[in-house]
Amino acid sequence: MANVHITLNPLLLEYTSKKVKSGGYSSKSEIINEALRQMMEKDLYLNLQIERLQKELEKGEKSGYSELDLDNIFDKAKAKFKKTS
Image (cartoon, rainbow, N blue to C red; front, top):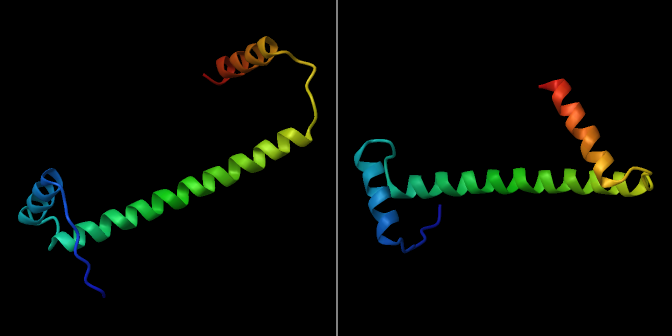
């Protein structure tokens, strides 16, 4: 593993110190590694969501135009929601 020097603001420095002192983590390095892993997972999830939404948008664009106006679409959505609630 490579060593990297980072600077934390006072709030984060205090937070990481408390986490180590409480025994939740063995070192500040462990906290930073965990935070970065969580960030990577979040980024992956968001990228997958974006891809899914882009596919749905393309699907909708290929389906053509609707004869319904916006009020009709909202009315149908509200009715569908009431049935499932």
